[in-house]
Picture (spheres, rainbow, N blue to C red):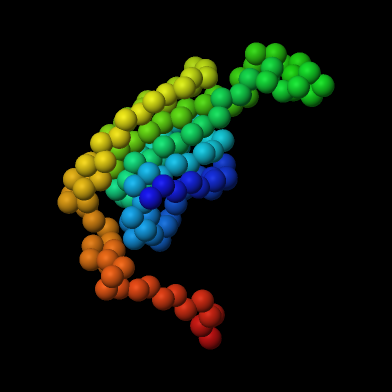
Length: 146
């Protein structure tokens, strides 16, 4: 299963419930397009891979002012870098598959050994036997408790 998530710069993280759901849904590739170009984001993305035991691809934008239309005020800043990129990829065991690049635009190809998903689950299975939809069903009471 492949999952895309839009991440806002103010909240570039997942809580433990979301990570638990990553495992329950059987997510194998977690793709996060975002505008966060900080070094801290790399630590967060690696943690998602480790805790979710899935491949994580962080797709970060690289943007120069010259990319704006000539009519836009930002275009006047020329080659000034507004967003420095930093796309990266991590394995289910947190290994770096693609180092972040903060120098410019690039196109990367990352190969994933899907057998790593199984090896990673042996090391840590956060949902355990609860990830068996054939015998368990989760029901959430959304009514406010009094």
